[in-house]
Amino acid sequence: MSENPDPERLKALGEKLDAVMVEPERKKHSGGKYSGAGPAWQMIVELTTGMAIGVVLGLGLDAVTGLQPLFIVVFTLLGFGAGVRVMMQTAAAYQRKAEARASDQNK
Image (cartoon, rainbow, N blue to C red; front, side, top):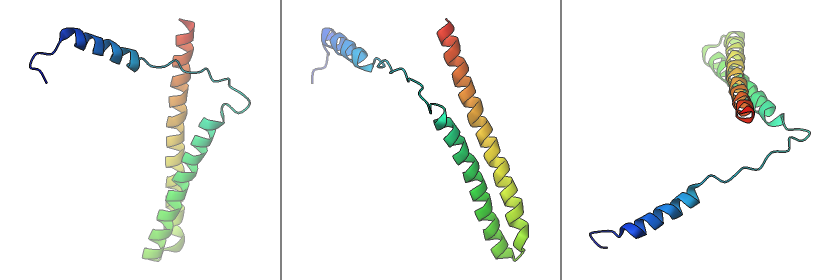
């Protein structure tokens, strides 16, 4: 390897890298019949996961403490609340993305 790199070769390499690094144009999604199903399923899974974690924690604490209905009720409600919160954050993120896309199209 030489001490002084050739500037012409470095420039050519930079141009090649720039050409490769250009983001490819994405295909337009046709929408289709079920285009909104992905975000909907994601939100359903988030809600269900929050509740399931709450139920499992509640059952575990009920088994350890012997207070049968207390912790499962409390943690199921907490899991539901956490699931709704995450679901609302996801919906807000999709809304921001849709608004950004709409403003880009209007420009």
